[in-house]
Image 1 (cartoon, helix red, strand yellow):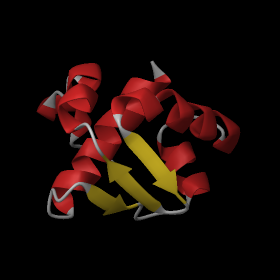
Image 2 (spheres, one colour):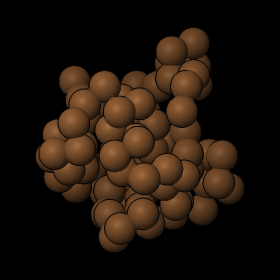
Image 3 (tube, rainbow, N blue to C red):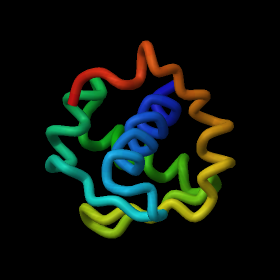
Image 4 (cartoon, one colour):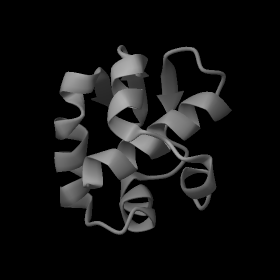
Length: 85
């Protein structure tokens, strides 16, 4: 599921940036899409599917308002989700 991959990546960036409920995407969305194996258009759709899980996007700024819900969706696995961009 594309949304799950994006959710895991956002949770990782969130942890790396201090876990304060907000994060900056460290790369352009085009680069992030490529790292996740999708087109920029699909990345936009994936962000839209994460809105019900408390993900709000404004350019490169992402606010996470319901982290427990996002974690439930993502089911992060450190062996898989802590690699790559």
